[in-house]
Every structure is written in C-alpha cells, then in structure tokens.
Length: 467
Image (cartoon, rainbow, N blue to C red):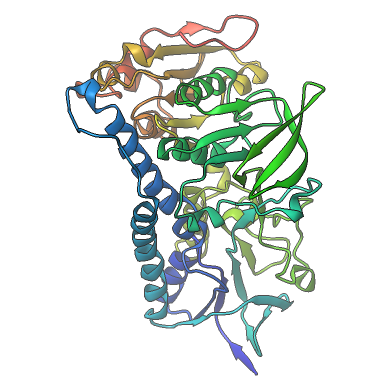
C-alpha cells in the first residue's frame, strides 16, 4: 500500500512539529512519523525533565542554607526522590502529551506511530505502508554513546534517558564524563544527598570552554563535595556486589573506585543508523551525522535534516532555529542560513554558565587584536546580596571594529544576563551600545556596562585567570 503526501516529517523533536504546523498551514498534506515519545529529547529526557530535577535539587540546597539567611526551618532536610520524580514526570508529561495532541489534531496532518525507513529518495516505509513525498524532513535526534569499556556490557549502567526513571537516591553515583550532562547530574544528585564522583579523561572539565571557566566550574562543584578525577581513563568495569567497580588509569597509575550506580555521560550520537539512508543516497559523516549545507539541505535534493542529527548544534534552541531556517527558505522567500546564527548555550549547574560567541582561546587563535573585560561575581551586588558570589564574567571585543566577539557569564543569573550581550552581537553594533545603556539596579546585567568600561588589551601568554 502506498500513500502520497506533499511532505513527510520523520521525528518530533523541536523542529519537526513546528515545521509540520507551517507546512499544513500553507496547504500541504503532511505525514509525521514518530517511533517513540513525542517531543524528542528536550521534552522527554533532556531540558524539561532535567531542569525540573535541577529545581528540586536547588530547593534542597537552599533549604540546607536557610540558617545563613536567618531562616529557621527546624529539623534535618530530607529529599523524597519519589516525589521529585513525580513532579518531573508531571512537568515533562504535559509537554509530551501537548505535542502529541497538537499533531494528531492538526488539519492536513497524518501521524504514524512507527519506525520510518527510506526505500528510495522519495519513499519511506512505515510498517506495511509506503509513504511518498517530494519533500522529506529528518528530525530524529540523538542518544547517549555507550563507550567500549571492557566489562561494561556485564554491569547495569545509566544514561541520561534511564536516569529519568530513577526514583531513589544512589548511595554513590559514579559518572563517566566531565562535560555538560555529567556535571548537571553530578551536582544535582550531590544536592539530593548522594556521594558523587566524576571521572574525566581530559586534564580539565568541559574542555571546549576556556581554562578559567573550567576551573571555575570545578571550584563550584568541589565546594559542594563532588569528587572530581581528571586525567583518568576507565580501563575496565566489573560487578562489585550490588554495585560496580571501575579500574582507572590516572597519570600512568592504576586504581579502583567502587560505586552503587554508574552514569555514562561520554557524549551523544545521532539516531541515523536505522533509517535506511543508504537507500536514499543521503550522505553522513564519520560519526553518522547527516551532511547538510547552509540551508540544511542534505546531499539528496528534496531531503533536509534538522536538529541533533545534522551535527550543527545539538541544542533545543538550534533545532528550533533549524525549523525557522527551513520554513523561511521554503515558505517565506527569506534566505536564512545556519551560518547567520551565533553560538550560544548554557551549562545549567547552579550557578549557571551562559556562553555566547567565541571563547578567549578562539579569539587568541584568530590572531586579531582584541580587548578583554572581566569581573568577579564577588563584585556584583546582586550576587553578593544573594550570598551567591561564585564565578565571574568575561567579555571579548574586537579592538578595531568594537564588535563583541564572545562572552561567558559563570554565576547567578548568567544564563539570562548573557542575552544582553547576545542581542547586541546579532545587531552587529559596537560594545558601546551596552556600555552606555542604563540597566536596572540591583541586577547581574547592570555590571555588564561597568565591565565594558574596564576593557584592556590581551596580555601575551596563556588565557587570563579569573579576576
């Protein structure tokens, strides 16, 4: 049986449903295919559920500090993990069912709860049915990488997805991977009450960030009792009673560490290996990401790739922007491009990191003349008043054009304040626009103009240390 459509959307992450909405509104007959949970990673195992859990962990953290603020709670602080999970499930579930209901009630849209597989460039098999369309959009997301560590297949382990089912407190949680996912879960479960050890292969945490940012994040986590092991490679994993034992090689020396539970946070891979892309001739890179051009077109005319599976961002906001780019080009005669967007993202430990544009290391490598401004959060009134003075701000400016090249705000409100900088970067205006702006007091953002008034030329040598 074959059914013809104007467009087929495979996957319902952040890009797919909105694109289906625009296409159907334009009068197209659209098929949406989803083999799993509607809403993709963000709704089900990523942003929404994890940030709900981060909020619960922060509540526990603040409660333990209540006496510092003159508040007497009385009695020890305890965490009910079943209630934490129930709250998270309710928040995530509403988003999941909302996406599914929207799509299934959408006019001109037919939803298939099944696995999609390409038969040819314009044919997709869905169960016993074949769907055909001149336009096919792939939005299948990604999943956790499971590293090939000897013994790993013989033990139980967790990933960011299976962590969503945890309704108990791990006695000792060992996390392989010192990047964004591992750090967020590490601090979260430490605040819930677990002993936590984070094992990182490299010499520092979140290696894509500047050294001072990595050091600042490490300081925040260690201050809360998170055990961090750098330059440590897991050479084998084995059962140890009801838990696990991991053999580590650290700076040439071997050691063993035991834990009750193991979380793998060693990276992500795209869900492209079972789509039959070879039948359509769609090219992928070495890691399985679908190769796309600046307007997200694949190597095959009429096939686009959006979201995590194209390797162009791997964030919810970049996936949604992929939808905007494709819709603008197809429906609005507006030639938007991936290269138009500025890199920006957050690390949602507490306090968070907000990032935009180039790192200091990238600016130095470019060889351009630049200015740098820094300010510790100890000199930010809002942070001081909240007794949350960990972290710092940093901004990088082109010395000749005065355009902002990049910024990092590690500290309370950093994930929100960074947008003051980001918006001016998109406007391609000089930094003096912010420097001369009058911001509300007392906020974190009000110190951005002050920092910009204290810009200095780069010093030769290594990356600047925290002020």
